[in-house]
Image (cartoon, rainbow, N blue to C red; front, side, top):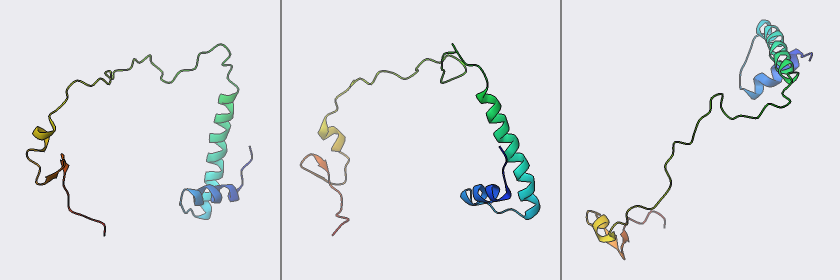
Length: 95
């Protein structure tokens, strides 16, 4: 794919970067190399290859989400600075 300095300026604007004229010319070449490499990856034959999410086989290490303890509401609120109707009471912040 042939890129222009305008393409580099457009991408730099999206990334909120500023380059000098010399740097813009260098980045045209660098971006063409990167896009060329990505195009080469598209040519790889992946027929029959299972899709993976990780390079190594990982198992889920999270525990089951199971309710284990039910706490007494009064015990939870015993140190609250203010409580009303079984809930924390907080100062009003919106008029």
